[in-house]
Image (tube, rainbow, N blue to C red):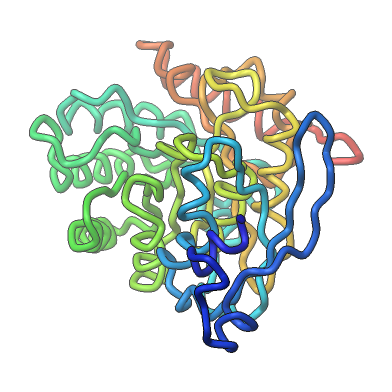
Amino acid sequence: MLAVEQSVEMPLDAIDDPAVLTDIVGQVEDIADQGDGRFLVRLGLAMATTGLEAGQFLNMLFGNSSIHDDITLADITLPPAMTRAFGGSILGVPFMRRRTGAQVRALTGSALKPQGLAPEALGDLARRLAEGGIDTLKDDHGLADQEYSPFARRVAAVAAAVRAAGSGTRYIPSVSGDLDRLTRQIALARDEGIDMVLIAPMIVGLPALHAVRRRFPQMALVAHPALAGAGRIAPPLLLGKLFRLFGADATVFPNHGGRFGYSPATCRALARAALAPWDDFAPCLPVPAGGMAIDRVSEMLDFYGPDVMLLIGGGLLAARERLTQHTAAFVRKVHAHEYPATA
């Protein structure tokens, strides 16, 4: 049923073209009983059906079957011709390390929030965080092009504030909208000297992520997981592999023990999928986040190792008038961490 649904979506006895039956109809390659009424099914699908286009590729992977409430897309294996066609992450960990100066250690990050603040207020927050020595500073993903914080004014104000701090902090503005708007916003950010942007692939669409990757090869794309929990695609596949396949250089995800329900096993699998050797893709930087605090820094670095960016937003902003000092303490803790021999 699954192989037919994800290939031709019609009764096989109604097909009279032998080439369709042999070359297009999906094949069941293996079925493994996992117990408790669950089965791991491996299907073989024809690459030709994808047209080597991101949206159609997802359609053939899981389009109709995603509507069934008892099916999860767990993982994929792709032929080299397909990975070459999509291109994958092209900057990744090496670029992020080079631009922040973090050659061997973990990176640090924070977020500008809450939304509703004017650009000047966000700029002031950015300055104080940057003076604390943070490596990266991203917009909250809810910041878009709202009346109270227009994109162009916000980017100019925050970029100027970060430059004034003189700490080398990289600002990562959030881009949103249709492809035309994404293109305009990224070009504006580039003109401000910015080389990293935050994008939510499940909001703007994975084809838009792929298009942006091709149009701006020197801009690092940090993928945000908003709406990524709305379907039944395993997080290590979606956030760790698919975002990377279409060009993400870093991937933000909910860390275990925070505001969301990801388990340690899911987080570890996701981070490994983002970093694992895959064709000639650059390794994609894992960015665990979601309710993290300074007192968990050592634990998280032991868990993930140095190829990670720790993102603490509200946990720093709650320090209010001591924001710069609290940020500096976070940075010092990351810089001073000694990793276990197995990290």
